[in-house]
Image (cartoon, rainbow, N blue to C red):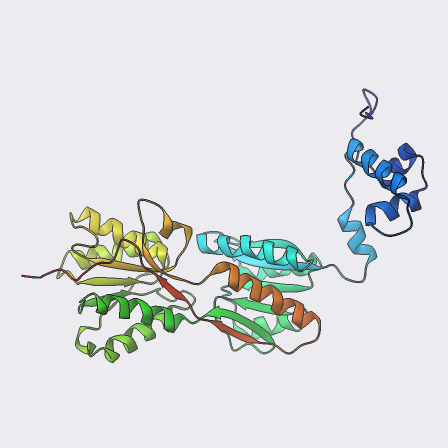
Length: 340
């Protein structure tokens, strides 16, 4: 029979003492059962667990952490407007739980700078900070790293004492250019990230790849950005003039803007223009998009970042882990068009 509070009784959190009293055992014995420790008979254990379930008892994890010497909290900063960051965060949760950590999030937005996001995490008592594509200057990242281990995800940094977990942006862009060249494309344009994290590395890789394939004369980099509007603007200017064979966009969101500009111009992808993105985000996998994109493998990066945090907490030296991305070919790339 369910145990209920009398009508009119103010709702309050059920305590371990309530469970112990209802089960007819001491609080110490109830604690042993709820912690899964040895010392309670099977019948007693089952009775306490049943009472706890009926009363809706949930252990106070915050109190438990305060009583321990460690919080087991990993702080994560991420940018609200970046869908791929959300995918990385989701993977961090899974990796952290597997390693016995809890996660606390702190968002970065137009009205909430990264410095404020980190300060909030430090105030929460985190043991380590996982910063997704941090924009803070190296000296500031180094200052954070003197307080807790800091892991920079998705971007490199020269900050002293900061771990880095990222994919090889150069290899990813080279794979995209190589794929397009293999399809017969020669006039390949790059729409850059306009100062976004990893934008310089990807632009440099595009230039190097074009030179490698003897296409130096066709190198063309347009000012873009990390959002759909940036790709739409840049590609709008592009299709209004001499249309290239293909576009290597800075990321998936930029590529979506390119696809919209092409559609508005009455052109077809990939028949008139091939387009590649970067991140292999959920956006690229939408049934009506099916964007060819460079995958950074969010679960693998998240697992590596959590492992780095655990290693640093065990007093190991900082690491710079670089994973190889993979190009995922879908429906936005095809053979080069025959130009008249």
